[in-house]
Image (tube, rainbow, N blue to C red):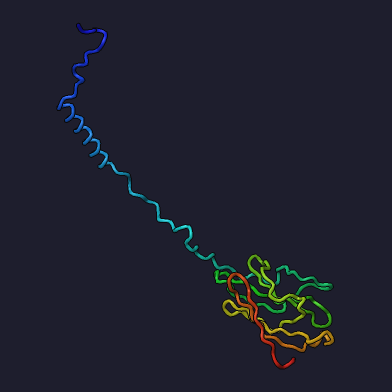
Length: 188
């Protein structure tokens, strides 16, 4: 006797026709998925994270006359006596090197040499005023700053009349300036 409360499950036994229908339906789904492809990518290829960046745009060299220098003057104000511009670090943006001393009515006050970057900011002191030397010429060639420095052989030499000459260069290497100097055998 068959229980009438349960559905008739006679048709649920798998037969070959059921397997063929299932295989055909699966093949149709796979074929349809193969035909429906996403649209081609339109994004451009990006550079790797460690790829060198393009240099910043070239701009004007810093203005030595408007910069603030780490130079304390008793009387008067700092005066730029020499300046030169060039790209010292190879970033395609020019730096300015300025020889600065205090404005004084008498004598020859010692000066300093400072490197400026935009916006008129001192980033390095090449010659500290405490070295008590004066700058007579200042040039930039490539990554090298060259200056002729006049100084004093002793404290008894009058400050008006320097008696030593030194040819000095600073080269930009590994993120800093390296100084080298040759002293003139003849006194000034």
